[in-house]
Amino acid sequence: MKKIILSLFFLVLAFVVNAQKTGYKNFYPGSLGNFGFNILVTIDEFTQTVDYFNSIANQPLNNLVYLEGSKEINLFGFINKDSLSFYRYNIVENDNKQIISDATPNQSDIKSLDKNRARIDLGKFNVENKKLTINLYKITNRSEIATIIIYNKVIKPAFISFVTLNVSTKKGAVVEMQNKRNSPNIDVDETTKNLMIAIKSTDLDFIYSVYLRNKLTRKIVFRSNDWIYGYITPRVPYLLIGAEYFNNSGDYEVLIIPKLSQGFNSKSIEKSTTRYSFHVNNVRRKYFSEKQLIIYGLILCAIAGAIFGAIVTYIKKKEAKKLALQYRDKEIAKLQLDSVRSQLNPHFLFNALAGIQNLMNKNETDNANRYLTKFARLTRNVLDHKELISLISEKTLLDDYLQMEQLRFGFQYHISASPDLDVENIEIPAMLLQPFVENAVKHGIAEKGNDGKIEISFTKGETDLVLSVKDNGNGFDTAKDYTGLGLALTKNRISLLNSIYKETPFLLDMKADAQGTLIQITINQWL
Image (tube, rainbow, N blue to C red; front, side, top):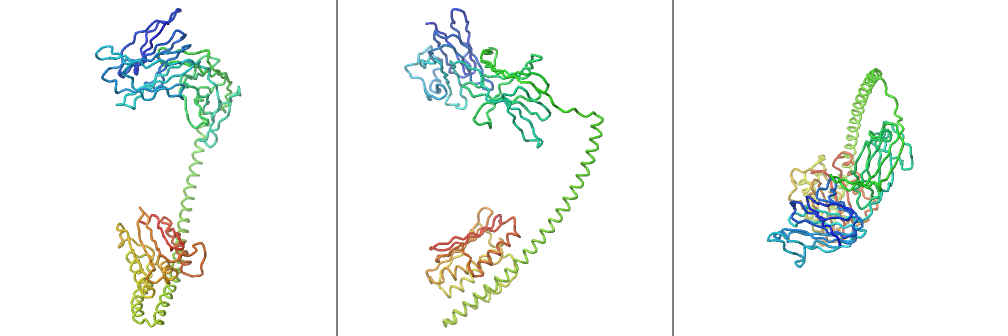
């Protein structure tokens, strides 16, 4: 059996092969290159064609060997003995079947050539109508993978999936695709962008080169094999031919030719050429004369200047009006907010006086006196018309109120603030939590006595301030509207606050069940 040994190097593939009518002669490998692991191939007597040293565009570590008629090949290689343990190789059949994975040569397959080099037998492989992909890498540099493709299949003509003419619309950036696959005539004007040629994906898309030929001059005006894999579904390779290559009226022909190499040994498979012919009609409108362009340009500049001036004046007036309206709306919202505050204050005072009356009716004179003392200080703070107060002031107000109510009901409470909050300087709207705390006492834990618990917390969430009131009462239906004024007024107040502090919205969240109620107010971007 006549054999040919083909040397496939990592960086340099060197072959010296003489093709004769009687068959192929053995070759002699060139320099070993820098990779240190050289794969060689022995082909059988059935081989009719060998095309080697096929570099792949933009992939310097990849190479292709094309065979015709081969049935079986032997793979072996040369390697430096001291590097043997550092190399791994994979072999994949037809892109979907892994024959060998991350392997190192068996010791039984290694034959010493001299003190430095060894010959490695990687085995025999059936390649009849198959594609073998051999990947080599060094474990100390896994990012560099040498790929050798042994292709023993018939290279078929490319199948054109579709041809589209892409034009820009009046909107400028939008591209409209017009299918021209079955159309022999193409109209070209100033909106034409390019011609898109898409083919059905193959084992070796990169070997197909697209040529555009002007039939009148017989010249090739465009050539490329830079296939793109992008937004088209299903995934097919496509290539764009700019309109500048076919913007003159006439007959053109697209040729898609398989080409085995990008180097000096380039070989085209003309019998597998795909052709697509079309006729171009240039329908561009005639341009104005230079004098007309100057006159029209000056007129357009004058019109554009006048329009620009009018637009600027209009925008300034509109912005001034908008600012005035915003100022008016903000002032109205503040007045409405003051109105809500004025309703909240008597609501609070009424509840406090009811508590004092309750203690007096029970003849708890001492508790009533203590209640009145705290009520006096609390009343001064409540009647203060400050819109914003510090967190520490809010805590003091809530402390006074809860201590008052604790005299009546005997519940437990706790107020806490995150240590990373500057409670002395961070301010919030006054009495923001007061109505919710009153509801927690009156409707939540009043009947629980010493078992009642209320927890109030001020916490920080990045740039947000989170205020919460939690009790262990029986809860309530948060979706239901109640006749009491406190909750309704507070919701209305939060809505008005959002109209004033638009960049720091207030979010109210209420959760309640049989185990208790949690009220949470989040002030976004407040910190």
